Amino acid sequence: MTPEDWVSEFESGNLSSYGLIEAFGRFDSWVVGIEKLDSGGFIPLVWKDEEGHSFLNIYSKNEYMDVYANVYGKEFFPELYLKLPGHWIFQNIPSGIDYLNIDPESEHTIHYKKHQFHVLEEIGRMLEIDLPMRRILQTPLADFPKIQDEFLQLRDYKKYYLVLSDSKIPLAPDDNGRKLIPVFTSQLAAKLFMDWLEKVQGVRNLESILHKGRELFARVQNSKADGIAFNCSGPITPCGFVIDIAKMVIAIK
Image (cartoon, rainbow, N blue to C red; front, side, top):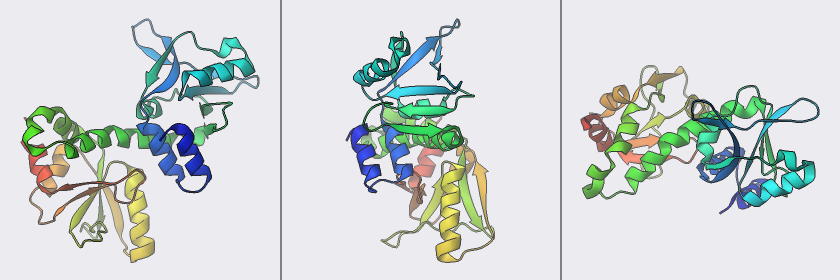
């Protein structure tokens, strides 16, 4: 599917607002105007409108840059641009801007405002660790020695959360009756699970505890649970492993 398709699904009610952000974050070819730095790096190019509001435009196709420049003038066509993954953009939105515009002036334009940026950033960070998780899932066991970097990324991630109720870990929901430890890669994901526990299950005295990767996997590696469910309540698509993944991560040197 394309960004146009995702917006259509969102507008028809078949894709949630979180689902739309996740889809945008997984798209790895956003065209973004850039400004080179003296250090050799770059930053996304920020524009200003007539009212003084600053904004960042990103495009799913080069042709949408032409559409925007035809409406507002060629000065809005960036001299330099790169293709960048959505999850990186969401984590690097320039400070102080008011809007992030996706394919502006197209038939499927989406605008995100300043108060929504923290959600974009959080989902962007979640996707950055979700990608190596899914590469591990797609790799045969015999080929695990070839993907040591992915295991290192899981170990070195510093923003895992466990949800506790009276110092115990409530299990993630599972239609097959498996015992799954719910782990969350952002505070937003933990909160969504806590909301479900309170409103649907009537669980009280909940708290979320931050863990670094080494600490988390060491804590759960000897559990009698069947597996780990990452982000079982969203906001991105859940991801699951057998419990032995914890020992594999800890064993990485």
